[in-house]
Amino acid sequence: MKCLTLFFVLLCVIDQSPAKVTRSFVLLYKGSDNRKETEDELRALQNHLREVASFPVLKNKAELQSNIEKADKRIEVLLNSRVSDRKFKINIRPIQHFIARRVLMWLRFGGLKGDPHFTTFDGHRYDFQGLCWYTLVKDCSSVPDFDVKGRFEERYIDPEVKTRTVEVMITVGTETINLKEDDSIYIVPIWKAINLVMGGLQWLQPKRVNGKPLISNDQLKNMKLIKEDDEIIVTLPGLQATWSGPNHAMSATITEPLKKGLVCGLLGNADGDPDNDFKKFDGYRTDNVDDFANSWKVSSMTC
Image 1 (cartoon, rainbow, N blue to C red):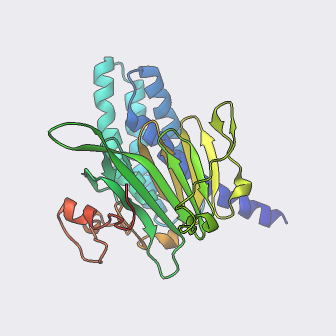
Image 2 (cartoon, rainbow, N blue to C red):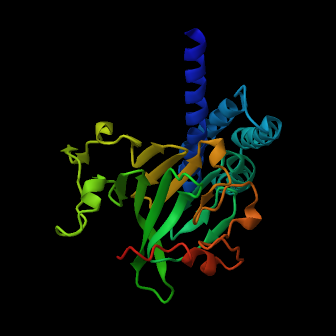
Image 3 (cartoon, one colour):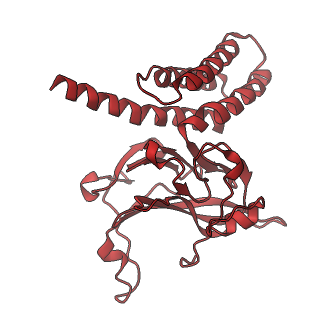
C-alpha cells in the first residue's frame, strides 16, 4: 500500500511541476514594470526548475539538469546584481530565451500570446495573423485523445491586420468546452453539439457566484478545470492547457511522453526538432509561415 501511495504521489509531482514551470515562465514573459514582482517570479521559476531537476526518474535527465543549472546560475547572478531597473529588465531577456529554448523545449511547452506570437513545443517562434478558427494542437496518433482550437479576431482597424486569440475550444472524446475572452466557460455535451436541426449549436453556461463562473468538474468526465486568478487550467489526457482570456494568451504542456512527436497543429509536432515544426495539415513540410498556418484553418467552422 505504501509503495502504491508513493507511486501515485510521484505521478502527481511529475504531472504538475512542468505546469508550474510553464506558468511561472509565462508570467515572467508577460513582464512587469515592478521590479519586486519580477524578482518574485524569477525566484518562483528558480524553485520550480529545481523541483523538476530533482525528479528521480526522467529521460535525458543529465541534459535537463545541466540546462537547469545554467539557468539557475543566470537567475542567481541577476537577482544578486545591483543594476538599474531598466538594465534589470533588459538582462531578463537572455534568461527568457535560454529557458524557452533549453528547458521548456525539453518539457514540450508551447503557446501563443499577443497579436499573436507563437512558440511551438520545440521552441520555434513565429508570428501569424489569422482570422477565425485554427487547430492549435491535436493528438494525431492512431487513437486521438484531444483537439484544441483557437479563434482569432481582428483587434483594431489598421493598414496591417492585427489579430489576437479571443476563444479556445477543447475537445476530449464526446466533451467540448469553450473558454472565452472574459474567462467565462461553456460546457457543450455531445447531445447539444449535434443538435443542429433543432436550432443550431447550443451553448451551456455554468452557474455563476459573485459574477464569476462556478466550475464544477462533476459536469466533465474527461477533463479537469482549475481557476487561478485570471487563468483557467485544463488538464486532459496527455496535455495541460492554460488559458488567460484577459491577456489573450494560451500555453500548453505535453504531460504524456508517448504523445511527443504524435501531435500536430500550429504548435508543431513536439518531436524535439524545431526545424520540422512547419508540417501542414496534409503532412507535407513547408518553410512558409502563411502556407503552414493557413493549412490548419478549420474550414468547417465560421465566424
